[in-house]
Amino acid sequence: MVDSPIRVGFVGAGANTRHRHIPGFQALPGVELVAVANRTRESGEKVAGEYAIQRVEDDWRHLVEAPDIDAVCIGTWPNLHRDVTVAALRAGKHVLCEARMARNADEGREMLAAAREAPDVVAQVVPSPFTLEFDSTLASMVGDGHLGDVLAVEVHVGQSFVDKTAPLHWRQDAGISGNNILTMGIWYEAMMRWLGTARRVSAMATTAVPRRRDDDGNWHEVKVPDHVDILATLGIGGVAHLRFSSVTGLAPRTELWIFGSEGTLRFEPDSGRLTAGRRGDQELSEVAVPAERRVGWRVEEEFVNAVRGREEVRRTTFEDGVRYMEFTDAVSRSAATGQTVDVADL
Image (cartoon, rainbow, N blue to C red; front, side, top):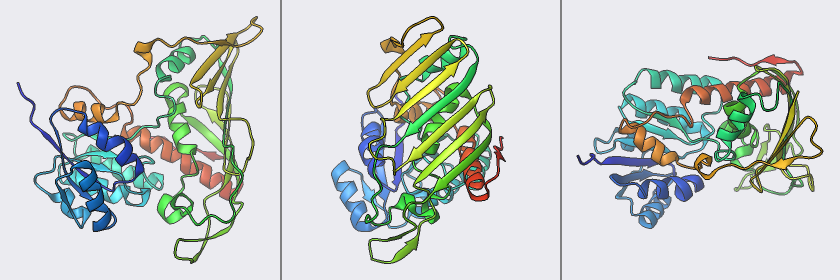
């Protein structure tokens, strides 16, 4: 039996869409790249020409409503994720939405509600990629008691000096990125896969450069922090200390530590190195991760298989997207108020 083609349209063709999603879909049999709607027609035509996409739409709404589109890949900035997702789901289109899911949890919950109202279509958020090849091993080492009870977690991300002269980046514009801070949401999403969700957070943040010019020379107040320190109590027990920064020049490279009552685990994403040790060991040793457990990036394949009814979405569901947005909102509220904040759950 020959599968019916899956006709994909792209709303927003940013770097991740061009470098990952479009090539990922092109590599799959029975997938057609039908249309693209970008911020300008000129940029849309450039993408369409480079990747052999059939046509360019001037308005994303036309793409979402087009009868020859089965699925929509959303690669816009977060400020459009809710609107495009809800419209696409209500039009009966399958949705693959770029991360971060939305600007805040309220928008994420609207997206989840729209997905639940359309149970026959697939809704997927692009997953955090940092730990994909190690998630199975990390989850089993935490879950099977190899480390004992999880007591403490440390995540430190950032090795750059602050650039005071750089123009305003869209990630620093709260109107576009919302409550998302640096790579905080990406790391928390990954951590949820093996540590579960946090219950409470206490955060302190700083904005090193309070005002920046945009590309047109206009000044903007910067409300997205350049550095945030978070203490979180975990549902499985233990406390996590998370630091995300763009001001820690020459700091140690990104690493994750999990300290348990019987063992310690260290993950270094830049080198893809996983080491661990147990009580009585003198040092950490390399953890061998078999090739069959190194399931890396297969986002487009998983999405297409889900559309065809061959598997269910695991990385990442809209439910988990809302969970990491709830954490993001709690961190923002804590940093703004100086109070410890409970993390809402579904």
